[in-house]
Image 1: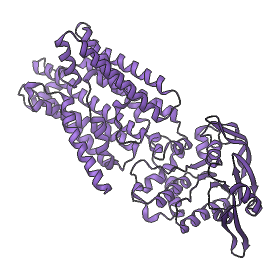
Image 2: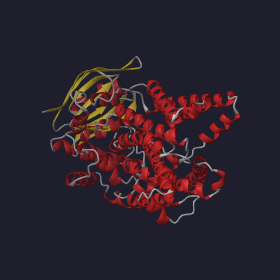
Image 3: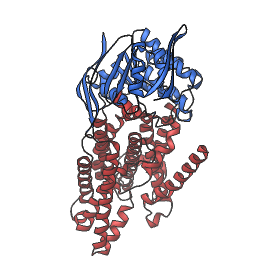
Image 4: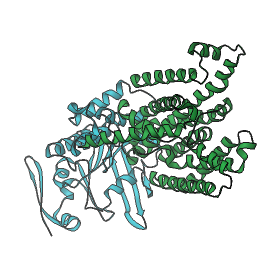
Length: 327
Length: 251
């Protein structure tokens, strides 16, 4: 446990500091970090505290949420292809955000967009729980999730399709690619409570997910209450994914790839993978957000585009490796 | 002391009665072989007795709280599932979950139980191997070790010896018989009537959801019961090397 956790933590801290010192204003790292800590009421302090700090904190929150919920989802479904988007919460949150942009709520009401996205996530999770039933197996959960994802995807397309306003349509397109640019501390305060609560309950699932390695029947006979575990998993995932989608848009592949990469490093134990994936997700999103700012800084490259561009080939490589191991 | 008391247990799955009014007790020190043709309801009986499937009637273990139940009985399902490529050591340690609070590290007692379970199943050389890369029979032994590590008064195992080589079939049954001699109890379903006759202290024959016979192997494995329940003839003798049983032909 100690070694991967240690170097993942160091990597997170290192990238967090780099993210803080990186920006269009060419200022030395020590100077900018000093301005962050000591308020000398200079413009630099404002840049650090109002622009770079929230962006770096959000990268950690979003990455940790995606990695953690991906690891929990894979552990519960015992399938390395599961990802947090599977239960449809991110799709429902995106629909809420799209409606906020389309109706103008995003422009007229302060924080209209993240709040509408959270409302979308809440409706999505209620629908999932109603559809999947209180007992049901993991299969009904997947089916309900696919149905919700498809429905919210279709409604999102419908909004785009019928949008009379090309500016709103392109704003929607860009928002859906996911980004951490121009976020404020208010976004941090919106996401933080949900991420802390959701993350806390997901981390508490380690024991049950370990037992599920032996299948649902054996886990149940070892005293794991599967209906409770599933409810906690859905609510925890909804909290972290709803909140991160609300503040950062849809960021793909992190929840899928990070647990997959880290699994061999933690001896494949689902409980240890939870912590590792939270840190690994933070590392990946911080790195991607740094890359976004280094490559084409003037073109506003979207974070979700970068994670998918990096994630998909990485995933292909992993599949190739798995295939050659299987012979 | 009774470790399991099952009274008037009935299970209906999709409007089809699978178990009908089954009652039996398991005392300390018994190795109970559950035998019967495919579809007789053996797995359902074990799962219902453990409270893993909705049922009518009573089972003393099914009514327990989850945490207590996990310390009263260990369950080895027929489906041998190992979802992740964990080491054999890690997998056997999963059996200690009911004895550890969430997040607690395994203590000396936990390691001792795992060592004993691994020794009993002859897996010492496999401890650091990845469980999913072992052969089917080796995986079965790992899962048996996992159930042993749970260290419960009662072990319920659904066809644990299926797919094992003869030596490990015998050593697994001897492990169960030894547990019974040490005052624990085992309920094991199996199709090898020869193994059942040699190693079990008691056999329950299940036929079409009912108990057709229940008693000592010599009393239960009669020509009549074999003909009526299994539709076979067999050779059965008590030799100086213990009971020998060989199925002969289909009637």
